[in-house]
Amino acid sequence: MTLLAAADTGPSCYSRFVNEWFCWQYVEDRHEQITDALVEHVLITLAALLLGIAIALPLALLARRLPRLESAVMGFSTGVYTIPSLALLPLLVPFTGLSAATVVIGLGLYALTILVRALLDGLRSVPDDVREAATGLGYGRARMLTRVEMPLALPVAMAGLRVAAVSTIALTTVGTLVAYGGLGDLISHGVQRDFKAELMTAAVLCVVLAVVLDVVLVVLQRVLTPWTAGAR
Amino acid sequence: MDGGGALMELFAETWQYLLDADSWTGGGGLVARLLEQLLLTATALVAAMLLGLPLALWLGHLGRGGFLAVNVSNVGRAVPTFALLALLVAADWPGSGDFGPYGRAGLATLIALVLFALPPLITNGYVGMREVPSDVQEAADGMGMSPGQRFRRVELPLALPVVASGVRLALVQVWATATIAALVAGPGLGRIITEGFARNDYAQGMAGAVVVALVALVLELTAAALQRAVDPMPRGPSRRDPSPDGVEPLSGRSTTVEEAPAGS
Image 1 (cartoon, one colour):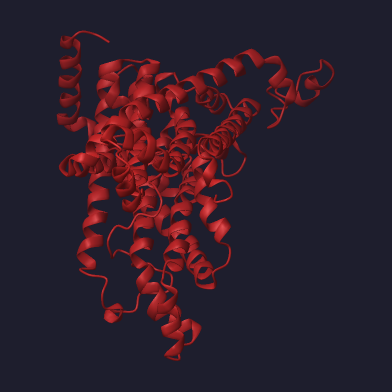
Image 2 (image 1 turned 45 degrees about the horizontal axis):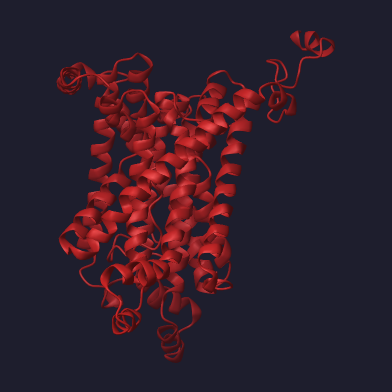
């Protein structure tokens, strides 16, 4: 029936009648749209991660001094984990509206909870005798933190950052609820219109993005902590 | 976005929606969706435990496949739940057809839920078994236990706390993924949220989100309480023989091996 109509007018592999999963023609024809979604995805992810780091660092340092704050932070982060992303975003909408800020803050919260735990674990992993040695060398609190504790906490903290980065990339897609989902918007559109090439391309790009970011962070960690080479 | 007045109004409307009996009853009401999602969650969690735990515990017992068992969690985190759900729904099989009491796109949702419950179960199952101290294992061998006895009477009871925390992580993950199913027109409470947003009825969206979040917290707290209640102190492995497939892993402290998967 309609199958014949398709052939000679040269409909691409993403026309309604063919609707293939993998279609390079689609990528070529819509590369601007795809690039826009990709850039939005990366920007939202990076903003959320930076927000998470910016809050997690002082929070972890404070929580280390105040045990009561630490248990409060731990309880809070377990609570946030438990709330599904699709429920967290609507709860933020009254404050931030249907904007990219809603997604960034929501994902920043998830990243924050991973990062605070990782930072606390990292700081706790610094051996006590190293601290004593630094004190013996006359290191004050600030210099101890920046010169001794932070560098030694870095491997564990970076492991946490990798976890946070990869899951934030994946979670950004849910931002499509407020129309700021990066590649998630393409996935959403693709599934509504049964547009298989769009759906598959966006899904593959999400995974590729996660892998690329993870590799970047591994390289960054090698550069920042040269003494751990070979250990991991 | 708006002034404080509009904000308060939205909260008032949300409250109104939650108090309205009509929003709870009926075909697409909160109660029906809640039951749908609880059924989905329970089915997927049990299926994933039956599939994943025997494999993970066996691998841990043998001490093989560690690379796979640990990295499956990393891979699981990199795959967006939403993308996988969308792919399953758009595919010819399982597609978006009705599936018994699970509703539209029920089968696709169930498959996605099981897939995303597996990584924490497998990783924690394996790590739990591997963390049993080797001198304890040697002692068991020295007492003349067969590998099977060592597995059932020594390794499994000692691994239970870590296995149980894997089950808790899986529960949180499954509940979150079941909510996202609504983004691809699947079943569950997420529908209340997505329908609200699609109709610009933000009060409904908020109300759905509140219910989803509250039930999530209740589930997590219940799981944590059960974990603590069932096992006062992990001393005395002889209290009972847990079944080999670990269907009753709710014991031990919450020794979390992996970070929770960020509510995806």
